[in-house]
View 1 (cartoon, rainbow, N blue to C red):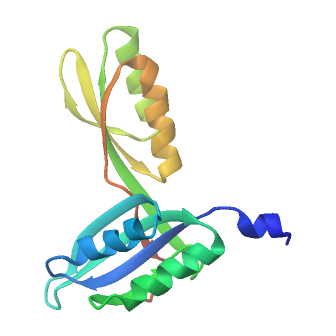
View 2: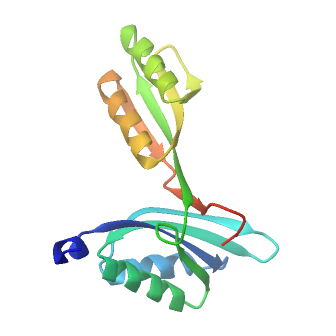
Amino acid sequence: MTNNDKDDLLRHTVSVLVDNESGVLARVVGLFSGRGYNIDSLTVAEVDHVDNLSKITIVTSGTRQVIEQIKAQLDRLVPVRKVVDLTIDGPSVEREMALVKVAGEGEHRVEALRIADIFRARVIDSSNSSFVFEVFGKAGKVDAFIKLMEPLGLVDVSRTGVVAISRGAQGL
């Protein structure tokens, strides 16, 4: 490996198990913004109602050193229970969902439906002049679907951000 390879930016998906309490998300985001790290995607949800735990999934980019620094700093935050780098800690599954609104008539409507079928996107709302599609998959698939909808009358997009989980029998 050359020094140039080492300095390249790497995309990592980090899963963080935290106590579900007020201010935790702000502290995690503050850690990133305070050090100039970028968050490409951020999702948060309660995952254990009994133990009051939430999972934060963060997609970020940085050099190998920056990624290690991010994980170490996240691990030091008091409400953080566990930090797992899903990119390097074994196989994982990532998905994103988007709602995509397309307005069009005639051939554009037909083409939008044809492309949606290829991408296995579902029509979840329809009117005489527009569709709202629901598309799931890796971020690249969602990006490609949105790009193909642009010339057909793309009006609006709402994305969930990446959700991810490790494969196999072990939990976070």
